[in-house]
Structures are given as structure tokens and as C-alpha cells.
Length: 334
Image 1 (cartoon, rainbow, N blue to C red):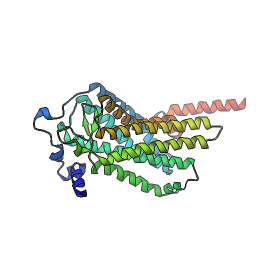
Image 2 (image 1 turned 60 degrees about the vertical axis):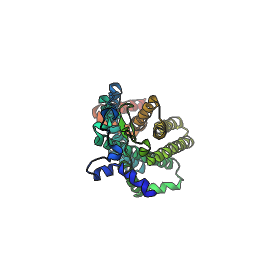
Image 3 (image 1 turned 90 degrees about the vertical axis):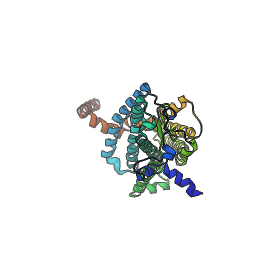
Image 4 (image 1 turned 180 degrees about the vertical axis):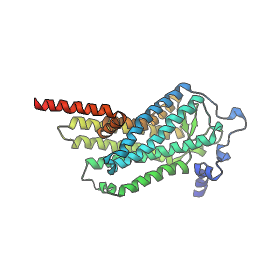
């Protein structure tokens, strides 16, 4: 009974496609010979331009943040190592949920036109999303340990132990992408579904690992980032409590709200037909869940913001630093 479940699931994976000479299993992904029975080509130029344009903006903001993390002396810390892995998964997610979605949606490209390409992009999308989930949850735990020094769990991330977690992020994300069913782009709804809409039984395409991941993600995100906000208010220095607590709360909100919305809606849409507006909401929530991370870094993380400023406009940054130093010296002399 177990093998009966495992073998059909494996037949729908990218690994099986590679082992099968880069051909998808026709029993599950074979397109009907009659053109009218295939998924329709529905160009969505306005939404396509939105996803493509916003994706380019996200990449332009995130890539400098990525290099700021790589070159930061804080990369020795478990938090920044985890942020580096999260950035890799986030950037790969942006290439799918924004760039690829925008291009495919603009031209209305259905699954049957480029089945191998779309399935491959779907595997990358799924692996990136699930990698983002586990990295984001672990980052929350590390931040909690930083604020609550007495927690024994902090020892789990000390020294070289953090590399075990980083390796597990890689295994979890890549494994999800190549060993579970990929999501498939549907231009009609400008979103990604597990069902390729080729007339087969929709139950074939239910991805239970993705469902379990999303349910756990939604619960843990609320619990971890809620507790992180509580610790920030409880442990903050009274003299700087208002500003530091506000920053922690805002970071927690942005990390939490969009991950939770995307997790819940995509798990919901696997089993229940959703109206078009809810499908778009879930797609945009997925987009913002990774795209908003760079906004958080640039607005609320002074170390990353300063490093990005040095990279993007070094002359103006140095000039601004000189002016601020001169003003502070003048104020001190008076």
C-alpha cells in the first residue's frame, strides 16, 4: 500500500523526468491531442507587466542586500548565515513568482506549449518556497535566542553546529523541488497550481508535503514571530524601547503576515476551488513574502542599509558622513 502511493508520486517528479530522458510521464502530464481540450492560451498583458516589473524592482533591491550580507563581518553569526541562505531562496523565488510569471502571463503561455520548461520552473518554485519557509522559521528561533539569552536551545546554533541547519535547508528545499510534484503555471489565473489542467483526475496532483509544510509554516510563523515581538518589548532598554520595539514589531509583521497568507491560501487551493480574486491575492502574497524581505533589510536593518549605501553611491555616502561628523563636532563645540 505504501509503495502504491510512493511510486505514482515519484512518476510526477522532476527526478523522474530526468531519468526518463527529459520527458514527463504522459499518464499524468500528457496533453490531449484535441486542441480544444488543452489548457487555453489567455494573455494577461497588464498583470504580466505588473509581475515582471515588480520582480525586476525586487531583484534590484535584493541583490545589493545579498552582497551586503555576504561581505558583512556579521556573517560569522548564525543569524546572518541563515539570512544568506534565505536570500538565495528568496532571489530564486522572485525569478519564478515575478519574472517567469510575468513573461508567461504576458504572452498567455499554457502548460502544453512548453511542458518541460514550465514543470522545471515549477520545481524550482516549490523548492525555493519550502526552503524559504524552513530558513525563515529558523531565523525566527535564532532571533528569539538572541533576545532571550537564557534559552538552552541557543547552543544548537553555536559554532559549526549552524552548518548542519544550513545543510538541512539545502536538502529540504532541493528535495522538495525534485522529489515532489511541481507546480504548473496557468495563464488563465496568473498563478501556479499542481494540476496541469490536462483533463486528468485532480487528485493525482495533490502534494501532501507542500500542504504539511504550509500548515506548519503558518502556525510556526505566527507563534515564533509573535513571541519575538513579545520578547522585544519585554527586554528592550527603556531609553530606546520605543524605536527598537517598533523595528522588531515591523520586521515580525512583514515576515509573518505575507508568509502566513500565502501558506494558508495555497494549501486551501489544493483542495477547494478558489475564486479568481483569491487566487491573485495568494499569488501576490507569495510575491511579497520574499520581495518584502529586502525592504525590511533596507529600512530596518542599519548594518545592511549602510553597506548597500556604500556599494550603490559610495561618494555621496562618504560626503554625507563628512557632513554629519562636521555637524556633530560643531554641536559639541558649542
